[in-house]
Length: 167
Image 1 (spheres, rainbow, N blue to C red):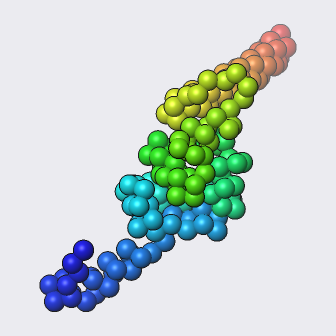
Image 2: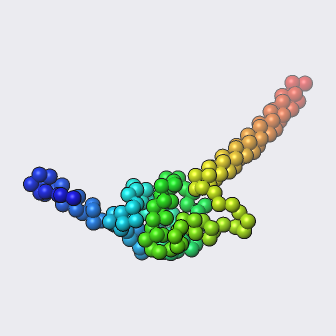
Image 3: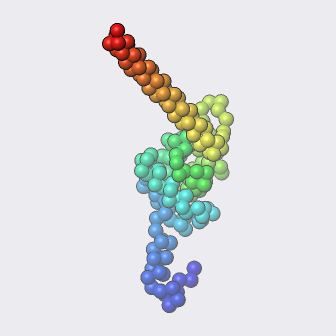
């Protein structure tokens, strides 16, 4: 890329060079810049940054191998992580030489229970969202039942007191 100081200005060219050379994806102690990701035709830099944040802040992984061996796909069914971020993870597996010719499939199969079928990441997230919604609805129903029962007890107590004082 032609970054001419005379045309773009020194400040802009300096920032663009820094951005190009900066670490974009950090998974534990492993780091990847734009050039490393582009080497395996991965140009989803925003998804890479999001994946980096989630893996390091929420899952506290040691490195890419730790993700491949110990983090199941269901653990990544989190907000802000979608299929594109999983594709970036597959590119990282490919860079590190994990999982052979089909690193994502190897990773998913590694964490499957015996006899379970392989599902897409989107269907996994949909299933988890449906389970969370069902749990929320159950909790709301229990709360409403407790509230209604407590109200009925208070009303009965009040009417009993009113009936005894009016005689």
